[in-house]
Length: 451
Ligand SMILES: [Zn+2]
Image (cartoon, rainbow, N blue to C red; front, side, top):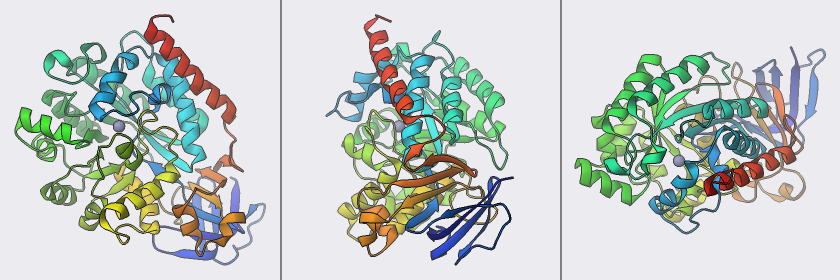
């Protein structure tokens, strides 16, 4: 078992304690000790000098679409619905090779911005194009991040009143059978799990009522979590009101979709009653500030959600609605958007860091295992370089949160080094970048009918 000791770092546990000159002892895949001052001597341990470094929990990304690395820049000034309609015909042509390449690049990008655990929400499964779900799982194992892929789905094409064209949707029975098979094959519920599957129909405007309720029943029978997009735009709110006579939040409650096993992406347009119901049921929210800004969707009521006690995590969302957005940068984006709307006291740097760590862990049901630096938790740790230019800041947490994200000295996932000196060590990052670019080129060719 490898023992690593980080010493003399500014350690932010996020669970309460902060040590300006602290240590963390890692034994195997767990944190053995965290505290002030030098660490106790441990025979044979690797010692890491944390002078000029800020140690935080590894960041948790609660919403993403890895495949979208291949379609960045589509409908650059469109609304969500315009952007989706512009993208669906191209997405319909993706295959497992496109997903593998896009996922490698997107996951490498995430790791390089301090992410140790990420979800993915993949909801386009064109038939006869290989095993797309397996492709992203392989990519995550290679990059070395903890992975929570959500088996997404859409069954309501345009002919059924949905937004997507019929060619990108599947039928209900196929979806539920494939989702169950994915859970049986991949889901690992263990404490140190690197791979957990969630059930994730796409959104109220692309999924039937039957698929929503069938998905909830399946997830609960299997003991896995539920995820979907909700209340992202006013267009969605209008559509749900027109079709179902409810708000998006009321609609999900009707379908049995509130609970501490559910987290929603976006939840921008919430009513006071929705926030109260989310808080009462433990329903979580993945806040994606850059994507919401890029699509002009609005600013989520994060400070109201936090005040009510709702679990809130951060998500970068897919790279096609949040191009080249680093997860660590979302700490700043979340903080500044809340302050722009509600005033400077709306979200502190430390509260924003908590969203990116413990808040995300709560959304994924893993607060016992990740999200803070505490003995017994998994050794998912980001060590940021706050020396050099960053030393001029009054407080290293502000240096991390207020401006450009500092370089990453090390990123540990379960005690394994995934990033060192801002370089991915598990997969050469130039190679990851090439794979992403190739996936983009391949998908455009497939969409043109050339490939
Ligand atoms: Zn999304």
